[in-house]
Length: 112
Length: 113
Image (cartoon, rainbow over all chains, first blue to last red; front, side, top):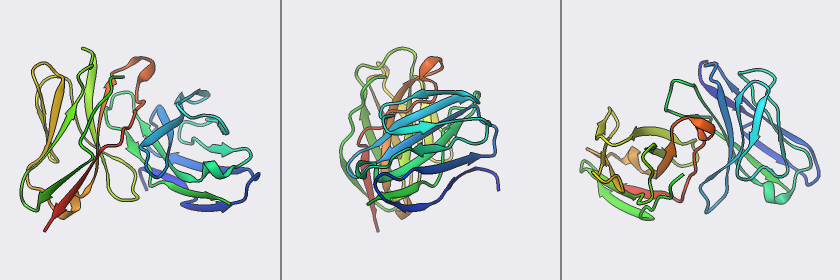
């Protein structure tokens, strides 16, 4: 199906474990983004990528690692999960000629 | 990007127009006004954007004041499905900030039957 998908949709893990959240888009959009949303907060930008192999930090990058070897995929890795990283994670993409940012359905991550 | 101020919550009767205000008094000449909404537990959804002229699409209208220091999103005939958090975002077009959105707290719009 066309669009932007995230997997898994729900994840429970333990403190100290490595977790990778996947994001895949079928539009060949150049820009991709990872946001987190916590109760009582708006969305905050973690990392973004302007193209394959080009990534940069957002507002809250600590504790996260990203890579982008292919245009359509933008995985987010928590190298050693902490309870403070319990959140809902949204991936988004935007093409160079568009103004509309498309968001995925989100991944709800719980770190015990 | 310029900071925005929105009321924390608003109510609207179904079938009536919902008018959501946003203040952005420090907006720069090259900054656009964007509106997104987030229906419970879903990813945000783009609604509309504008620079200085009023804009309309199939979802909503955007009215920007002449001095560009404030704007109003209008949902002409609100339905129960329009109940959501509405975010007003100001962002420069292009450059290093391309696509980067700074979300505030937004306005919780509740549409009543």
